[in-house]
Length: 331
Image (tube, rainbow, N blue to C red; front, side):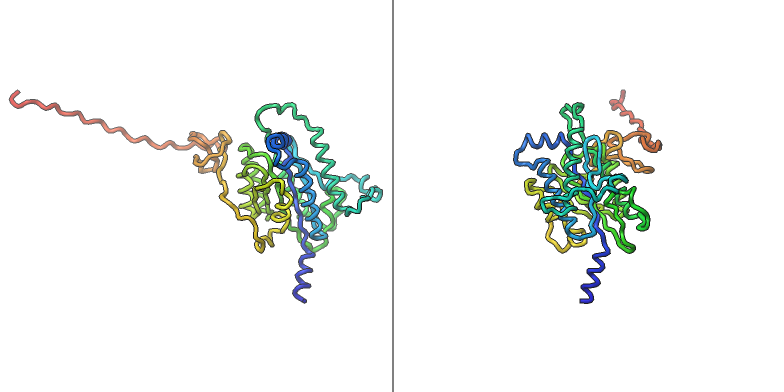
């Protein structure tokens, strides 16, 4: 009993922060709905994520949540909202849910639905009437998530919180924070985002932040590397209509308890890098010995650090021996 009490007290001193990033590329979701009726829609995907977020908050009373929408032109914090002083002072006048739902769950769901509708209705997609799919700004969303986690870890518990997001609530002295990021990816990878995404991955590794990846379409080499480097979980959902079941089964448990569960095994990881000259994924390339920039073809000067490479000396051509003409004897 004494061991169990100490274990429970240790659990109460740990706060788990989950940052959810949703790939809300409207062009991809629109095309996916028109091409395949058996594929999950954006509406059902948001519903599944809301249930997943509520389940995370329900696991422990001091769990924290942040929700980020990654769009083709911007990345935005959906929850928690950046409340002003007037909204905080009038917090008691907010209407409570009348359907018996827990107030915290209703606040999360309403914020996600409201901000999602606002973002999709105000976004102008008239400039993207081409056959090419506009890329999702995943790197900016990962940067925002890492900044949120860093602020929460470095905050002083004795300072006021009016200028900080509502998820960054007062944390008792001695309480530890475990953070992780869960990315729901829909649109395919774009090689131009290789460098900023890799910078985010190594920043997450340095800050001990786990990155989980849930992919609903084709495999993502970037997120495979992110999950492998940070110790997270990568899963390509085989049946998108059962997205909620996979979220609760694979991504709801904390990374510390996943070793005790039977989870899908990881497959081959695509570690191809994008060249700095054409932003194309290459299997074999040329690497600068100074700054480690990668190029798909040989260049005499590095485009990043301006280092001049010494060309190997060409082999000297040996003079060909002239053949002696055979002369008949006596002539």
